[in-house]
Figure 1 (cartoon, rainbow, N blue to C red):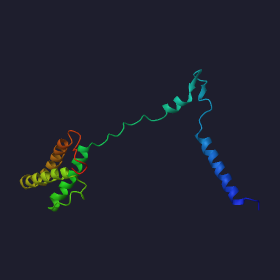
Figure 2 (cartoon, rainbow, N blue to C red):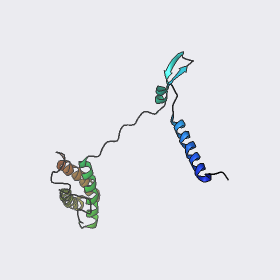
Figure 3 (cartoon, helix red, strand yellow):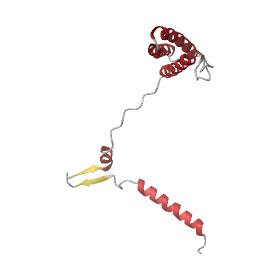
Figure 4 (cartoon, rainbow, N blue to C red):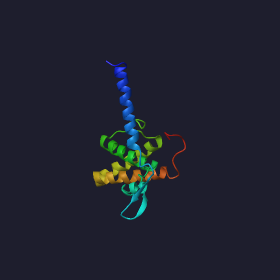
Length: 147
């Protein structure tokens, strides 16, 4: 058996793998190729870029008002079904969002009695959106994350 056996083999394997990765990532040496059919030289990078699909629009960030409306609407439905409120912090709500939740649920209970469940759910979505938009109109509360 040759000296250095497994250690030498591992080192050689790592060296070959590194060489393959570096070689595989390298582009053309000059970056320019000759296009004999058109009779001119073209840039290899622009040829690669033209084959890439156009970029899709960047996703839009969710605003604090939208997050508030979603979480208040979710918990409003839960409270409407259960009939009882939980701890606002365990719901992931701030104190101000919890105030919105209580107002929305009160209005939804009245609406459910008058117009039914579907009308109550529409009211929940509408009021959560409007009340949260009002709360975050100026960028949000300034009393800390739980206000």
